[in-house]
Length: 467
Ligand SMILES: *Cc1c(COP(=O)(O)O)cnc(C)c1O
Image (cartoon, rainbow, N blue to C red; front, side):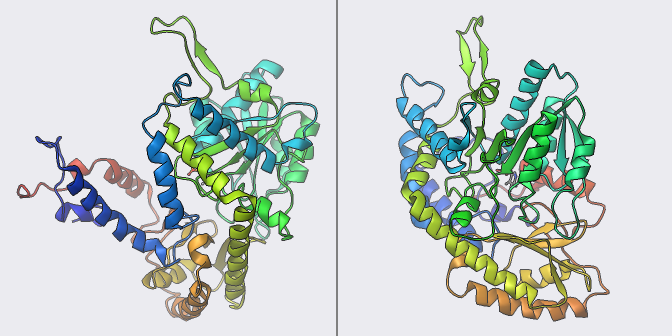
């Protein structure tokens, strides 16, 4: 049985609706078992990213809040004015965090979306609409650093925007601003910068990108999906973190994921705009529809008010002091882990990172280190060109003993990598995870993996009917 379908042997596989509805208590018991088993994979603190707070008390609290509003459609505000309170305050708190008070010539605004990709989609769409109406742009392009998240390429693909890509400096991992300048033309709607980028966690020179955007009359979206809810606390705590927000006058929008370091449930993020007029270009309405006058502020139709409620609840329950305290533990853990990496002359840090760091080697393929660390329960995220692996430090890594375990296991992994340097490593670079046995010619594998995610009714062989 495939490693992706471990439950097929233990539980019934539903190829059609069960003829008779199952007992709720039995369902809950079955799922509690799955959840408890799967949570074990990260609870010890060996998994990069994903479980940002890693605090079951917070998850239980958010679940309680979610349950009160999950069934409510946030599109129908007459019956749920609570959604207006939650959404408006999520946006206001986020704008404040990004120093919207520094903006004097326009009115800042935002929109709550379904995740980082959702915020990036809304950011690109708003810039396209704005450039079309204000500048008459008809063949839009965006200029991005090579490190920008694929969600920008996805947005460009969906919205008919050309993608132009600037290289990064291989040592600092930061975008070559002059190269970006050379890619701008009269059809450019926006530049992209990351704070920090997903691969290396490093922060592009947003000050210079801001100057460039202003000089050329284009927008600048700062992708703070990963760093947006942690870097501001790091700046306040005095770490070497440059401002990346609306204090730079060229920054026109910022994406920041409440479902990452905002410690909310998966399925929420904010896209903040310097100018309400640009945000308003996301508005959609069809007033002549026989079904009634229809309008929605962004791309989504119906949304669960439970996500707005639980995101809001996460933000107000942590508060500034809570976020700052958690950020401090995460930064200090990350810096201690980076010291462990730097103690090995064979390992090279990618640029100057903070809470998320990536490293590589000139002595061996770093995926040998990954192969070994996997045997000790570590799960990194893998990069390529050059091969490197990253750790986005989260709450679970701040538990006592995790840094020591990292240091010890890494000290065993390096000799293993040296010993196996002439062989092919078992793991390779896959976003969000590093499975074994991935050959360099991966397109077909990736296609079949996506199929496996969706088509279990075809990929699991039919066994005798379960009892
Ligand atoms: C996670 C991430 C995204 C995309 O977010 P999703 O929530 O996965 O859609 C975009 N940019 C960066 C830098 C990220 O880390």
